[in-house]
Length: 263
Image 1 (spheres, rainbow, N blue to C red):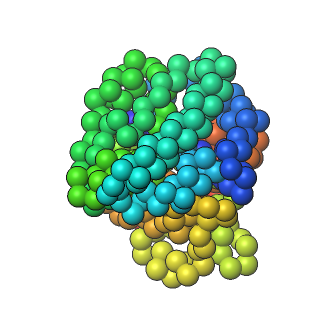
Image 2: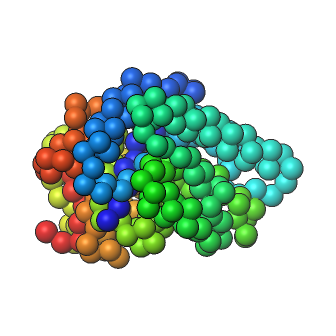
């Protein structure tokens, strides 16, 4: 089975400062992944990351998520794609430095949308990379859209589309919070489709600029995904916590918030 891991934009960048890369955070995550790969056990991982202060700042400027209809907007979309790729290359460099067989798979080259929803997705290159033991790297990206010209797809949207074709059993979303918090600032240990309506008013948006919706969007999308894929486990946790991936994937500790189809 495959595990999808996302490094949130707020984790790998400072969303309040344009093009700010948190190299130290990515370096420690890369070291944990290297330990996991060295441990073997047939681990299959697709790593994703948000665009943070790279892609989201540019995307807000050009309003790409709303569509692309003329030459100015096409140029804007191209610039959004370029800056998102810039962050991805920085992360790739840290993965390679840690000795990981990481390969970039920009979603803009693998998919098309129709009215902001993924309509076409080519997964065979990703499947082949996983079978060979490589570490595919994806990210939130621009997308050509057959109805509105172009848009932006979040990493969570890409992940949701990969669950079935890649046989995904687990998704881990790492950010700068301990999990999903209630109104008292306490981590909610479990969320299901049944409990989400009551919890939804407690969720806010994003810290800094996020054109794809922030925490509310992430949790809502993951709850809907869990309802469709009852065998899937989704964890939201703090990526700054020392050894977080080792705790979750090797020690199997219950950390952060888990989203499942049922308790």
